[in-house]
Image 1: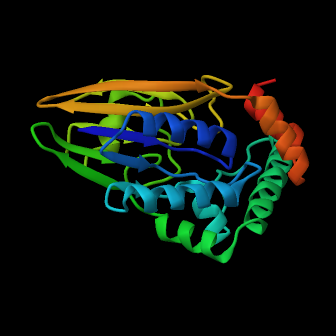
Image 2: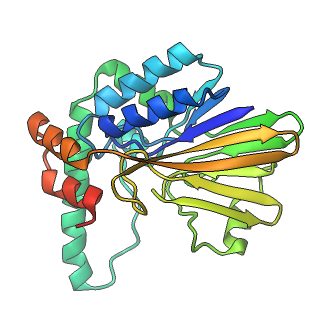
Length: 255
């Protein structure tokens, strides 16, 4: 049995098309999309529509979509929760960050159709799981089980990860959100992150996804990273009037 997992598209249609073609070439039995489909990129509606059409073609039972934190922000108008600011320097930085976040989320919202919005609304707050015969339970979530904002990262301690997974049963836990690939063994769990399709932080200019091939009691994990044309994405953002092209350029290039 083959499971393909991707997430964190963030409105990057160019990268999503490359990942779609690569996933289809591997002929998976099951596909999971673990959230953050649209916001913070120049093609939010087009990415949602591609995923909807892909799911309908592949089969809704075999193609599972769940929402991420930015999907929830777009749907509900909420924003990332922050603790009180401790110093004045951080206060001024925070103002700029909040203004950028509002601009990005509101512009993305303005580009959605009613059908796009309804599709996102149906996905928020969800997780997924699948029982693989001969292997056991595999679970999928956006950030951590039960929360789409917290961070499970390569720097997280075993104790932190074990706490996040305490109320779940299984062997393999697959998450998203951190825009970086990860593969760890923690107290009976294999904890994996496939990275980001549209805005990788650990491999800039790469569209990332994961292929999980199960054979009896064993899973082979391939974390993929495809080259894509960042300049084409930036030029497209300019063409469609994306409001923060310099921000997007730095996010994709880390420069």
